Image 1 (cartoon, rainbow, N blue to C red):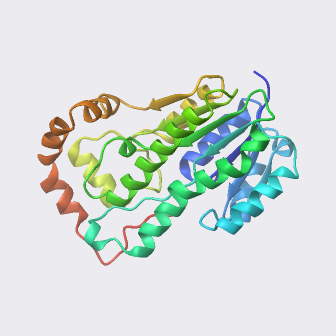
Image 2 (image 1 turned 45 degrees about the vertical axis):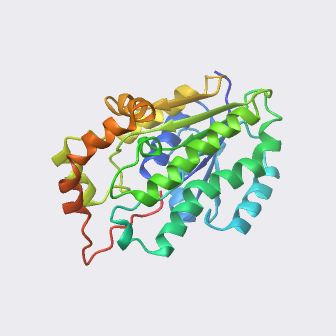
Length: 272
């Protein structure tokens, strides 16, 4: 496969690191984006062909920082792919979710991908391999108690991707929505891990998501890819018969509410 230049946001998180390793091992060149220069440098230096990669420090919650990031990327080598992976999650009841946390999730999970797509699209369209991978979630297709703000942000990302796919349908650009189920990363607090275990929800290793993203690089047709079974089935069922899914999830509500109660330690999670 042709070596591509890939802009990867959230590079230092669990999924981001796994993607960086997979992409670099496949011979692609990376522009790693994150908030910590030290962590980015360490990641780059540990990748295959480390000299082929560079990193850019940016706070994607800032519109001005994204403008600077896009200008920095424009001054570098041509790019082929944008992977919008950065994001944040939080588990808890809506009544206990602060304005600050809601704003942070919306800025990082939906506004940042929108701003990056807008800013980098002219550069991407110069490539014959142009592609965007927006990393969503199964919670972008199924509303789940305890994740109201997170679901809102991921539903928004899914809708944005769908609209963008249709807006660029006449362009040689592949636009993908990649939706993992639960993944074993620091994005999941101890409460979430314990709840998933009690509910019988399966969590994938980050490498599963990275492998799916790697396969999308060879797909020239826009797509929506949901990972995991039965999650894929429930996303489809929820779209067709939401009352059926609501009934099934209501049976789990007592368990969810027990774990969602606030504690002295914040359940908000680090940015990936």
